[in-house]
Length: 162
Image (cartoon, rainbow, N blue to C red; front, side, top):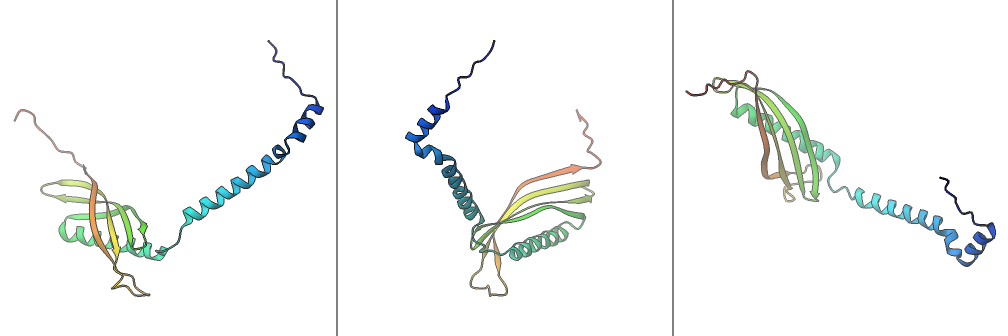
């Protein structure tokens, strides 16, 4: 079966465009609209940099240090602390959310040899009255653990029926 495509004579196309001059410029207008949308999107997502990148890096390093100090102080048998993710994001000019995921090995008489992984986040507020131009002070508003898991390296034996 053949498909027959109708072909319009060139006179018809010229007559069509003469009556509808605005159709000649639709591609040009569409292109301008596309560039305007791209420009607005870029400006809206870029936003202003209220919190400089070095502040984010300092907060991430401080969070790592606080977690390592806490784990070492409260779990002396813990070792091999690894950070899988430490990320900060600006919520507003004076508030940052810090997300983290870390793990460590723990072995003692109760837990044997395990790998403990912890995910969580913290909200930090800028302390405007204590901050200076050279040094910003941020405080924890809250800290939440969203997920934790324990991997037993040796496994635990369970005897049924006893």
